[in-house]
Length: 474
Image (cartoon, rainbow, N blue to C red):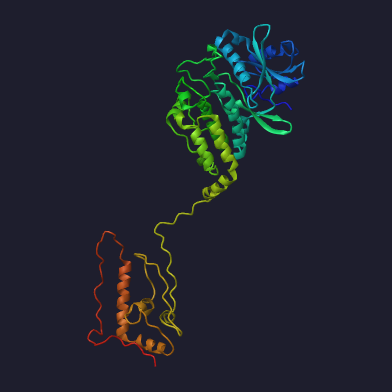
């Protein structure tokens, strides 16, 4: 299967199919010239042992070919520097730095470099492993990754960084395009870190003096892809260390899990300003089911102050491994938050909406029934709400002194009914009901400190020596 991806840079190669299969791919004089230069090596043996079979891809720095080691039969990739780049001293240095850095690390998660040499015209070439698969960027463009897949890939990338940082090599340009998911028979994809062309050697053993040519930066020069730069890298600081790579890994996790980069801007300078001065939105806002434990790991890796980040790739791996081991628990704990986020809010209540009053029962059912009392139904007390219906004992029976706690039973109900037909008692009940109606119709004013009471109602029994006699049991 031909995969249209450069095995070194990880970028898409729109012309791969045409070159390998023999189709027409020339679209411009420059493309035709580059194609002629590429075809010049096809069919030749480079370095006496690498037979060139086809072109895998081209870039501004050079061309990548597929070849075969004629002595071992191993399929390899050959990256040859473009002849025009020979005039640029810095490009030649970076080409050799790329070979030395990747070749010195020697880790399964780093694209391995087998050999280094030069063609007859002086152009240097690298011989490295031939990768089949796709980049993490290609996966991320299709959809966001599952939590376990993103964690597993990042642990592999960090494992390669452990080996690189122990050698004193900082990549400085980690991004999804530079992480290749190599497909091999019988095993899951293996993450490979590509392109150490802008890497930096930050330390070296005393017995191995540092090559001054490997440090290709100057104070204030910004190196790397802007979207994945750490704040100190974006500011042009010179004292960079492995924590810039850990920051980039946090950005990659953010992007592959949410489908969006944490910092976006209309131009390069505004992007650097955002990285230096602003905070990205929490990834859980973009993906509500994201476990909070994983969000905390990303936040620490992307801390603006590098002292607050993970000190080493080992610490980063340990944090991700802990989340991976408890992922099911963390996901289940986040499920209620996801449900709340997906539940639509209740419809708004219309302004000044007054619920309807419940229907009023018959007076006889409210006042008494044989076998015991029946309490009045609870009615909403709404200031200003209109009231309708007859006014009398059906509304205020339990408010009359002497009847509030009265228990009707057997033949006492007849005496109670006779009592309520007394015109004087009915006058008191209706006066109390009118006072209650006026109190409920007045709007409530919280600024008042006193409650305005209705004028007293004359008591027809004020001169009597005792109140209404309760019917007694016989």
